[in-house]
Length: 99
Image 1 (cartoon, rainbow, N blue to C red):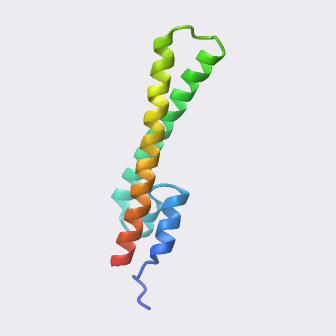
Image 2: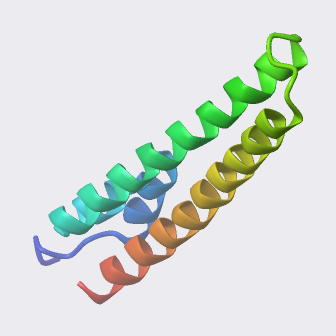
Image 3: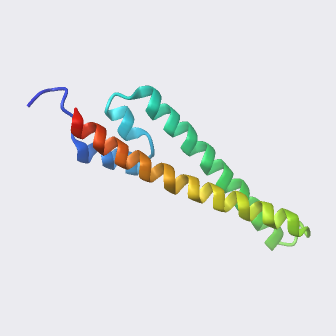
């Protein structure tokens, strides 16, 4: 077996554990770091939305606009994490298969 051959299953599992790790395993350093950065950014958006929703539920913020903003941030972060995760897993698997 060639030493440069990458295991597609391992690449997919690493990307499942944390987005971008499969790309790093495949040797795609810049792509992996970009995916890790974007994943971290979408997680921060999700957390910020959760905080705003939590403050509204606790009665600390009365404005309905803040609740809507919190919901938009939460759903945007959640959708971003899911889309980026699926892309990361699929891409890491496909690239490792070609190597």
